[in-house]
Length: 269
Length: 91
Image 1: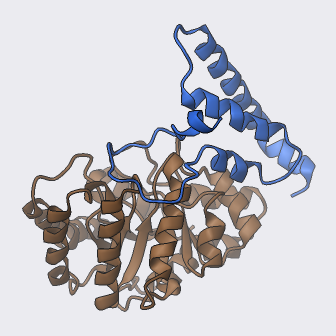
Image 2: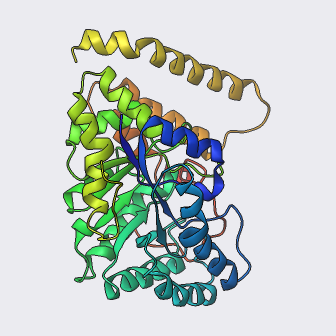
């Protein structure tokens, strides 16, 4: 079963995870910039992280035959400090020409604060000015519904933003329609304890159709499963979805969205 | 899938989760101290499971969500807790 992992925080994972992904049929991993589990102390810390995402991690992935792509941003959990945010956003343009950078992400909201929203809008502006794809993180748990609405309002208020070039990630049953009906792509994150199980993700595919939808593991330093995407493919097969339908969800859809960046290329078959 | 096939695939798993919820409520009841907004929200959300109307997962998630519309002044902490604290004031 071939698949693309469109959202994985591989800097937090082991080489065993790379091996398992490659052996299971993974053809590319895509890594959005995110929170390290602690707040970085300075913009220099982000500079080093962006170097890791654009230089070191692609080399590590290449040892397992996997193309590695990255998204850059200041994540919403560190967006409360506007001075730090401005310094980090200023760093990003010089990394945008790196061969594995696909766009700006994962930007979004965490607790739905005014500063988070301000920094989100600044990074949407950055993406618009540099014509970058956007990957959006939606908040957790009780904050998700309100945050998704705030995010969609902000994106729709910027006329430069084409929703077909934006993916709203971590959707669940109460937010998926908001994203899809507004013309955005939507990502379903498969987590064991929060977000979405494989069974619920397949429910949503059956309810909303496969168009503009992808699944990801968002595996990181927390409780998460790097092989969640192929396991969801097995769940689709268990319910009688065809091999072609599984291939579309696990490979075709992410390739279609990510392929809007000319840098996204898979190894020739 | 037919309803029979859905039951064959998922009934035992759903049964297990149902018993886990029952055991959680028993555990919370045995423990000393008062409820907080999370348990109140949880009990309210259980009401949606008894409903025969479809769309239960969406309604459960919505019932556990912050229903307000404006951005908050500042993020006091980084972590959501799974239920909206304001539910107490409106219940």
